[in-house]
Image 1 (cartoon, rainbow, N blue to C red):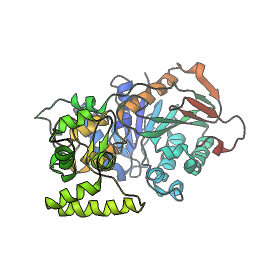
Image 2: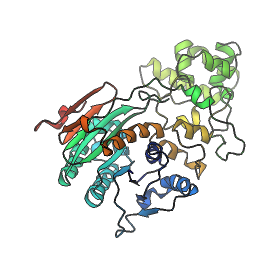
Image 3: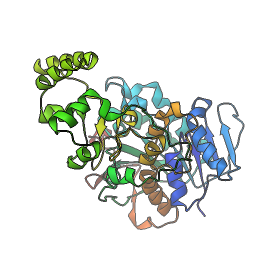
Image 4: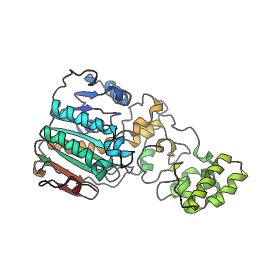
Length: 401
């Protein structure tokens, strides 16, 4: 039986992916740092609700704790340093220190067969080279080889474009080539339509209580551009996900919209569109974060989307349960504090993680022995089905794009 533990699981998407891959098997322990207690709390509550009685320990407060030996350790360390900062400072961001600290702790003290985690796309790009160099030094020091797997949730068959990088430390000097995981994607409208509307579900509350069709721009789209069609009819005629700004810019114009807004005394909206229209005419960029309509697949489910993505058939925004479903979190899992809805997004979609866990488990069980490459560093790209690995003393940037 494969055993595993998690360190800094956050809301638990990756750990739940392992649990799903192992047919419901729970972790031997969960380690974290006090700073992540709020993020971890939803996952720990879910485990305990299902009878888990193992240790949850903050290793910065209990430095003498000695975890049970396990085959696999996983993590979802925060990666703001490689996802939101500028390319001039991102690779040196303090947020990346969690990656180094957990890698040093796990490889030095726990020595699993595999330690793996998830991070931003930047880890596999040139901006991530300084981070990879530091991780490789830790890997080499403790007798591990390191690999990176670049992928996208959409390519793996799910409903959002979520470019991510998984990183792995393999005990020894051999790295397995993973299978390439590519499937037709589940349509976002089908995913959301499949969720039971349970009035007793405490997560069945709206993230945004406003009605989408009351938003002046969307009202204009429905009433003027489409002669009074319903929200459901509007979504049905879409070819792909779009938002109110993009739709008006492509199929109408702000010059036509502005008088309509003025006649109806939508002063705030009028002023916003007037400023945007001027910027566009002057060749300037604008931020297009607004009510978004789902069709086929969506962008990465982060930032503004949880509160501005509409339901595909009902004239409303999403519930907490629906937001959790997009990340494939269990339907009996609770978000302990609804105001912390961003914790849902600071996560790995469970099914994306399960695909990775399936590969790791196959390695531990010896089912990838015929796919092993003797090297200390390998990069594999699931999107274009390619890989490269260190054959001698090649420069690291030869692997990055």
